[in-house]
Amino acid sequence: MKVVPVAISLIGSYVSGVTIIGTPSEIYHYGTQYFLVVIGIMLQGIALSFIYLPVYSALKVGSAFEYLELRFNSSVRGVSSFMSIFSTFTYMPFVVFVPALSLNQVSGLNLNLIEVVVILSCVIYTFMGGLKAVVHTDVWQVVVMFLSMVAVAVLAIYYSNGLGAIFDDVEKGGRLILTNTNPSPYVRHTVWSAIIGGFSYFTAINACGQHMVQRYMSLPSLKKCQQASFLFTIGVAIFVSVCCFSGLLIFSKYKDCDPLSAGLITNDDQLMPLFVVQSMGHLYGMPGLFIAGIFGAGLSSLSSCFNTISLVFLEDIVRGFFKRQPSERVSTILIKSSIIFQGVLTFFLVFLLHYLRGILSVCTSIASIASGTFLGIFTLGMLVPWANTTGAAVGGISSILLAGWITFGSQIAAASGQLKSQMLPVSVEGCLGNVTIPEEHWVDQDEVFPLYRLSYQWINPIGLVTALVVGALVSLVTKPTDIKSLRAELMSPVIHRFLPKECFEACNQNLDTPETLLNQVLQEYEEDFIVSPLRNKNSFK
Image (cartoon, rainbow, N blue to C red; front, side, top):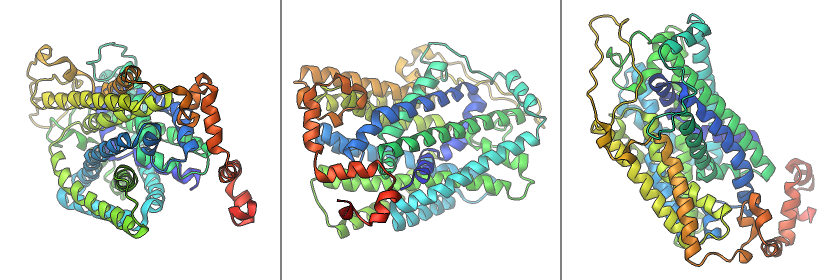
């Protein structure tokens, strides 16, 4: 594959309707401190390019979890694969529900009908075209998605009183917050939670997510992978910035009449669709363009999930865990059957989201349970030479249990009214009729278990640190790996200087074959410069 289509597909795989709908709502209710996740996004691009991608590229892995078998054993690979499938299944309903909710808000169409159409259309083209269809549709979906958000922002500024008035409204409303250095982990957004949490979360998704690694490995060389990573980082940073700015536009419009309090919407996550309809609904095509952007985001993420689970099921579970080698025909049947099964299961799971509020934080919290653990295990393998299988297993189990405990405990505490809302105040002074803000009941948060009060931004870093520290310590006390017997390519290049020379001797013995040398030479040049004129590799040999 080529760099630009893959980079755009990477953006489409990450940016979903949750980003488009959830981010403006987060800014509207909690202020602009969340914007500093952009710094975390930039930092993850550096970490990915120099720590993780060189290892994947050197090993030519077909699956991210294949690395875990090479570094530890097939059991770690298999268990991680099952965890990945479970985590992806919990994420897929979100990417279906968000575009359906938006179209329902704009058109009044039945929510369940929209969800069926979204899932069915995505199943059909993923079923028929595989990864190539997913990547090429991602390109168009991302283009529509980006154009819709930029068009909404530009037109909103045009119909407002200018940028100065917008920022003046935001500042008076107490939303312009960028320097909250409160060290408390209980505050929803601070400088520390936004940067550290953003870095950890985005690195986990980009470095350990099979849907991302699969695309990087479709490129011919490490240099191309790093270029795609650079484009992905810039693209996502710009997109998140536009979504954050949209939150400011929404607050400026509704500064005197909160839509939820006025009964204009029934859910916080309907803010963005309402804003588009009321601000530019008179412009033919604009509501449709916005909905198309959300559907593009949802379809690109959903098709990536379908494709990823199918590949993980075949490569990591059937071939890796159960050690089966199905024929090409049987493999095709397994993959396509799994896509249909995923579509049916997603439809049933999406019903659980109909009464959910704060979709960005909930989705991030649930995704962080497994992603923080994966990042910890992969980092343990690449940066801790003495790490062994026992350490990886104990560290991973400890991490996912702790992160899951915190996540579900905090969600239950919030749903039962035990946690005080950290939403910033809203106004209803400009609303027509007799509108009042519901009185907030006093809550003594000191009675709530401390871990349940943590900001959702810290769940991923907690999972990462737990897996890394527990894994490293357990490895030390349970027969650590003999570093001299370790292959250097299994470790990240950033620690190669600390490895004994025996690691590189083993590496050279494994690599110095004619076919491997040929592949290395081919990767140093553009494919159209060598391969095309010579027709094939044999003529080059």
